[in-house]
Image (cartoon, rainbow, N blue to C red; front, side, top):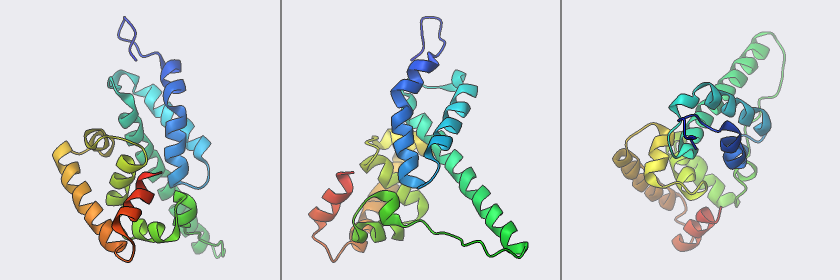
Length: 174
């Protein structure tokens, strides 16, 4: 999206990828996807000189870090509330609601580690190639390919009670 001077047309970048980033965050954080999306693009604006030619995987990488910071902040707030004597309920996101999938698949996804689940979702739901997912995760393409293979095998094992083709089709339809 660089123009002839090598500058990024940030308005065009925002229009092209805002909905993708919002959906990515919405699937992972049941609340505040608008605020988090704004924060992603603020970081991207600050680092616009670093934007690659294919910016979506890079934006997903920023979104992962923004979401992690958001969750850490929530955990700190919860811990502070608990220490202060308050009894604010700590909510654990319902994976079926957060991911918008059947309970069996939600449980199988929840059984994966955070990094494996993120890799599977980047490829299956966000439609990234393994190389693009590797960029978003900050690892090498070969590493991502091996991790994806192992994560899919663990997902299959967790879904063993189901017909494997149905389970994978349910995952890929997202």
